[in-house]
Length: 334
Image (cartoon, rainbow, N blue to C red; front, top):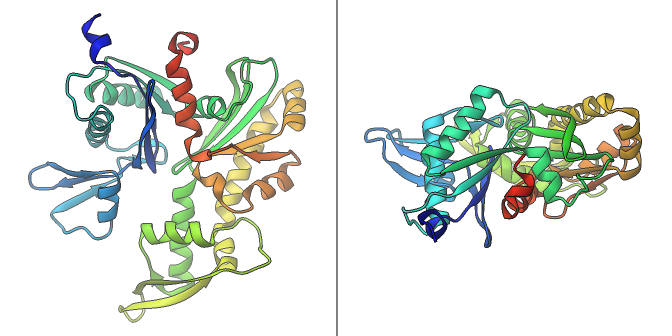
């Protein structure tokens, strides 16, 4: 048995704007944490990664830099991405250092050659001996159980934190795709801006995400939900508490929801007639954290005229698909 086979445990990584999820070959998903890293500005030392670092967001002193090294589905800070990957890879292997795994990393369809090189370099610098990249819609489709090997159209819409990835797949190839910079982060930003403009209240990103989960909806609901939120009054400059309801959050999210639907329509417009017929029959599968927005499937169905379903466990479709590929890497290597 060679050194690599003795020490390596291959990984599949969904390197997401919001969360990084790690799958270990033969073990399954072992890490699912926010893509956040905390750095000491003076020493450059990494103080926290993942959940612990996200808790510090908006509460950190000047000496501490809290960074989300991926933005809009792209690596905005290569060095900090490498540090974050190193941490998660070591954590996946119980912090053992004699590890040189093969790694599959999911990437957006719109990624450039330069960005591909950054991702590959980050993976190798983080300890991988081989790095393979797979487009997110393809991985999500495999994870959602779509018949991508068939000579028929399968359509997947992966609504992540930074991007919405739309893929039309047939015979294991992406026939048409679109990567839009719209997703969960844009929803959070829209909520923050709405509350600031209409309620004169400044809130943080973490609170906006909580409101999205509690009150977020893409359709008008029979029962209006309410929640109290605390923040900084932009007029009095004092801490205050207000009440907001689900109808207001519906209004705040309209533009973002429409942008997601426009992304889907763009790919449908590019579909060859035969594959368009397949989608009309088979429908669209939505996945990713954004797919959990209440009523989003209904709105997409109304706007496109195509059946829509949500994947089982949509937050994990991409990494599960990459994990399936990892378990039989020779089959999917191309």
